[in-house]
Amino acid sequence: MFMEKSRNVEFLRKIDDRGYPADYLLSRIRGRRAQLIADWRPLVLSDSPADRLAFTRYGSIVTDDYPEGIRLYLLKELVWVYCRMNRTLREIFRPFFLYIELNTIFVCLRNARGNKTGKVESLLSVSLLSKKIKEVLSGSEPLLSAVRVIEDCFTHLSNRFSGLSNVLEKNGLQGVELTLSTRYLEHTVHSKLHPALKDFFVSIIDSRNILSLYKYVQLNGKMAPPFITGGGISEIMFTKIADKKDLLEIGPMVRKLTKIEPETANIEISLRKMVTRFLRKAGRDPLGVGLILDYLWRTLVEATNLSILFYCTESDRETITTEMTQ
Image 1 (spheres, one colour):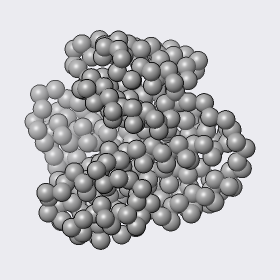
Image 2 (image 1 turned 135 degrees about the horizontal axis):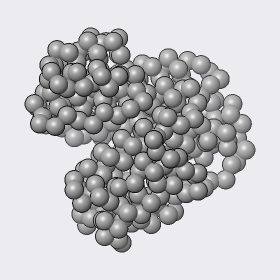
Image 3 (image 1 turned 90 degrees about the vertical axis):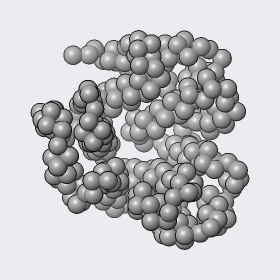
């Protein structure tokens, strides 16, 4: 069993508590939730989606910035919500914000070592990450040194994060990303969480396990993917399907979790829909954490859909629609 450590490293930047009451934030979120894209058909069918976005809340993004501008907008929206949270809400949601910012860490490590420091600077300028973490990601240090500092920071949460630099030497940056995200999920889901956040991370773990299992079976992989503990799927079930390598065994498991009849080609979409539907149900509580979590997730899904829209410009409209979470 890993020994847990005290939190004496700041992962997110310090922002003064402005004293906003929770009701104020909930009221503002209801208004912003109404601005989310409800009907994707006009954008998908349009010859110029960027022009159509000019009439949405993404209108401030310069056309040439797609899809990077979408990521920047997402981070800005996270900061907007975080800044209007009181101390209690920030403590509840800190694990969620850090989970989203893991992707910022990964993107910066990739781009800084690829001479794309401009993208790194743009991301870090709007990121919630702390000053120390941002300095590491600025690109001034060799990759191994940067990963060692990141490892040192996370081992202040738990010893389970030790060994990231060894992972880099053996499996490269992709291995570091997989290991850090997996260990963060396991650490977080086993820590003290608000019930809504607990259910969220359990859903994310189940989704990750099913998706990695599906890809392993579909591609007839040589080594079974690592199992993430803390979800609703048992390791026995995971191992059984991995050993049999039978895609037909995955469908019933997805159906049981999502209550959706999955199409084999769209397992990932079914899993995103599972989390979305769960959070929309939680978001119906007008006084609770669920409403905030629902808005943050839907904002993340919206950014994902927009990225699909701009990355798949050469795909047919039906394919793009299928890839989106609606």
